[in-house]
Image (cartoon, rainbow, N blue to C red; front, side):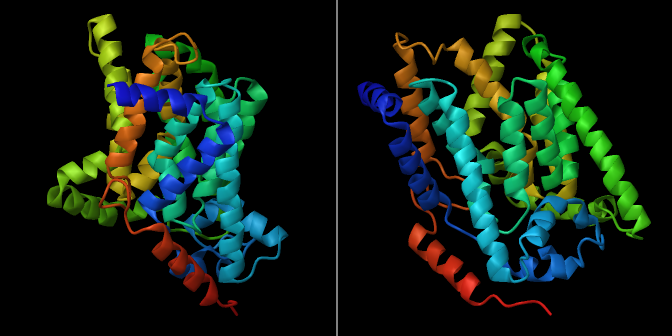
Length: 363
């Protein structure tokens, strides 16, 4: 207990920039790096999609292609460099967002954000549209003005419209709970923005003659999910939230205990609804963590206020942060078989270098 308390005090008092570096290196060691080289070459590049013409259902995620078209990105290497830059912006967004919490409390938020499965997924799927979705979700969940909410919603839609719709539905669901009613305004803006965008992009897909959609693949992917669950149900369930299960279960316990009743909208929003969508698409941790990212940040805000983590006189805060950091180090994250080290940063950097060296221009 004393060790956790001492560690927590050091983490909360640490220089934010140095703590950020420590957290990033720890995350890199835990998850490693994976580059979507084959998908980049065959599906993601503007030249593969014939962008701006929409050629497939995944063309709906136009944010990456729009940037690539503007910057004249035509090779796999250039695409990887672009997404490394976008991932850097994601981490910069975490850092800048954490600073608004003030001294000490900003470090607590930073530790929480680095522990999310969505953050780990950024390093595990380099080349996908996840960074834009991540940036939008962070701006949305941490925004207080209507302008920030609209901006975050729009950016998230550019990353992936389907994920944005589900994220909006989850936010709407928990806003019906009495402890999260303050989210009704945010959920309305998010839902309105995503519906308008999805209607527009689907009209463009229809006009472009794209008949295939994600919905047509559900039977195949649902079967894949069923196999994954049956083979290892505990692993499948754990990696959906990862270490954040601790935060979620504590919050649900407090909310249910304080009210003396089950909170169906919270159980639906945090578990049932995202689980159904993730199961039928077989996307697993990566998609689950992204669609639940806004509500997990809202959940942090609830516990932040409940435990008064921003109060420098709160003696419990360092202990909580210390134990949470220890748990993050020990427990495995996505793509890791061990807690502290998985495939390792060195081998991961080698794979990244190889992916860039083996890239080629598409003709």
